[in-house]
Image (tube, rainbow, N blue to C red; front, top):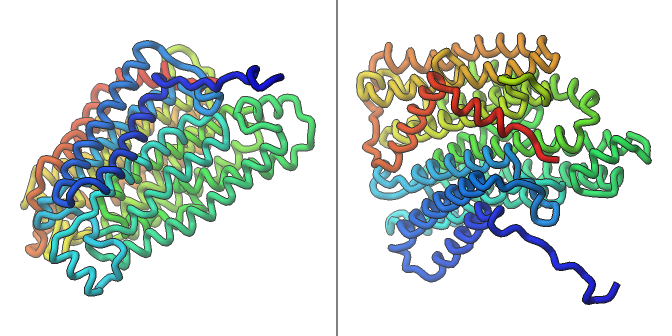
Length: 521
């Protein structure tokens, strides 16, 4: 072969345009930070990030209408039904989360982010930056970079691309978690913990990739599946790689025993960042985990299903039991998130692919659950930013006493969200749990479904406890509902309406995910 015989690489620009738009906007945001005067940066960055997510969503819809699909970017990315749903959900949730990022009315005209993140807490530099009302507008391009990594991670067709996407997704979140304006030491501790444990899990993930490459001779998921079907080497290196890969993936999902970062990071990070990563990181991680285990390791399902079943069981138990003891609303939602990770793993364990007409397979049920859970999560953390005292957000559950008398609308919306988290009928959370439980039951894991139902019943207690505190306790006069702008109210209202709508009229989304819930190999 001569130099002129080397084929040119192929790149499907239009099919990958949703990710490219987000990446270009992130790079543009960094450029604007260098060129614009400080006073103009914040509003300009908000416009850029919202326009970028809207344009990316439009491009995604155009691809969907053209029925574009396939293995793209020289085998690195797969555009299939699950990719469309996950990309669409990530873009919608990110658009809503960025509105909460931009809220300024709740804290005397400044955002929730530190005036000078690099300054020592309590130092003169911090005091001067706070007095000058400085803000970190680069949080918006950082969030876009993280979003681009999430989109690629959920759609990766080879493990090396998945690792790069994992780092692009994670590194901005480490920074964002440490940038809270108030309780800065707690925020910096959260960012450091997240970084240290995240780096540790990434090392496991990379070692797992090396093991599977040694076994199959390829990074591509389909090639690993083919190597398992026609083995050349012993299975020891395969099982080692599978285990190490699972550690990295389960860390991002927030499953036990890799969940220790979740409560500390959720509490320490700025609440807008917590809401963003609580659903977007989980969505990308669960999507990537399902793609790896279904597409690459599907032939070894009898090896990993029992282990994941045990992980799902322990994750539900730890999340539910520890949530019962919490007195901090953000920490309670963090352990609730761990419990929901366990419920999602119940569907993953079912590994149900071929189903009769009118029923959902495992991936379809996972997609529905993530969408329903995502709307409620974004709205719940947006409301947390609005309940305040003189020092900032009031996180103590006892301090939410009498909120129903102070602001019945806000308390009523939060009650609806709590009922959706609990899986009460007529909410999206109920339909989501029904979907994942059905998939696991049909997949032969009835005992795990029964355990999950039991944990759901127990979990209802700590959700309903919050409702009781809000409506049946005397108000705490030191706590008020901040006068938020429409930027925060939009995700609150959208999340509440979506939670009710998906509970009353789930048919359209159920049909959509049923058609789209099949991975392209």
